[in-house]
Image (cartoon, rainbow, N blue to C red):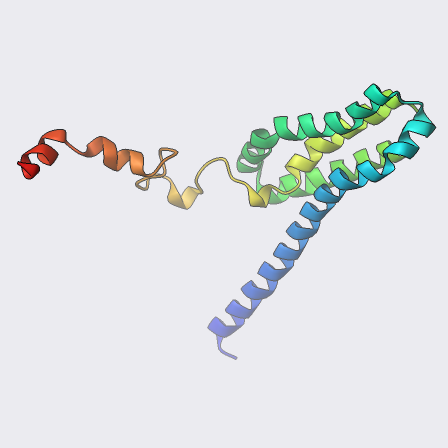
Length: 164
C-alpha cells in the first residue's frame, strides 16, 4: 500500500471521529438548553420554586454560558483544545449529576451555572480567540479586520493625484 494513501486514509478516519465527538458534545450542550423547558413544571412542583424563582433555572445557565464565551476559547488556546474538551465534558457530566440529585432550589441553580461554564469549555475546537501559531506574524492576522492594514497603508495623495 502506498504510504501517502495510507496516511490520507488515517487522517480522514481520525477527522471523522473527531467531528463526531465534537458534534455529540455540541448536541449535549444544545439538548441541555432545550430539555429543561420541558422539565420546568415538574421542577417547580418537586423543589417548591415560585414562578419568579423558576426563571432563574433558565437564567443561571444562559447568563453564565454567555459570560464564559470568550474565556472558554482563550482557555483552549492556553491549555489545549483536547484538554479543555475533556475537562469541560467531565465537569458538565458531574454538574448534570448534581442537577439530577439537587435537594434544594439553590443547589439546582448553582449546579446549572456550573454546568453552563463547563458547557462553554467543552466544545473549544469550534472556537479560537487568537490565530493559530502557524498564522502568527502573517499579514492581516494582527488586527480583527484584515482590510484595516490595507486601508491604513493607502496614501491619500496617491489617490487624489491619480484622479486629477
